[in-house]
Image (tube, rainbow, N blue to C red):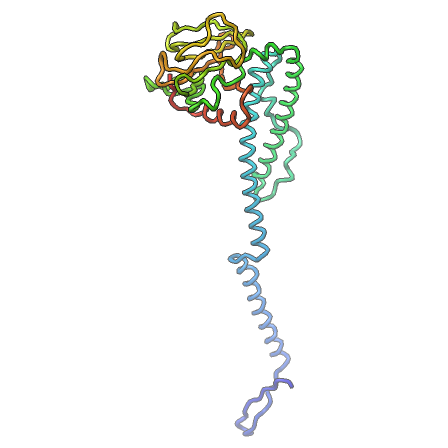
Length: 323
């Protein structure tokens, strides 16, 4: 039944049916549609500014997760780059140099890719810089790994007939990890324990109890076992040949004598605190052709990658040395 409306006509004292003209009906419909349109606009455009749709919530969560994953990826890339940089340094300063191969320039190892913009496909997005930067780092890292792999292949070929050389290179830690109290100080600028002045520390300090065994780090001949060198106290110098000399200072007592031949791993002395020393420890240095070099680059013989990484972090801290 249709909804018919009436009004009371006082002149005829009767109810009359309300008749709606087409013009009025059209105005009513137009007004209704206009109001509906305004309401829809508010809901769709204004409401969406303040409220996320279920789909937008899902997309925003995915975007946040992507940003988190890229941040984690970049952190891992930094760790890998640090480890690879250390390998490259040893490759240039030890393996290539002393196997008579030219060092690989840093610019060659780390250069990017010229020519066409290979990262254009990542442009135009809100996180374009983050994504493109990560891909650039991955590409450069991949190239560095390829270069390093080829370099090691070359070194392996050069080393086939140099087993004697490899046996003599100081390649192990002079004190076993299980005997260490801690790795006290590394190679680089440190605070002098006596003057409190920042100066260059040319070796590594290993803290251990008095009497802890000290091991020869490579085959060689004992050239000195005395206390006639300023500051070192009782110390030992081993000539490994090929221009290498290792030095062990502040000993408690000796286990070798001058001109004695030793093998890598032989006990040559015991930890003490003689000479210019603040506490019992071993001060360890390596010379190449009379020049002191960082001993940290020579512990490939008895440390795992995790142990070496831990040693690298401790040796890099600029703290106070013990001598």
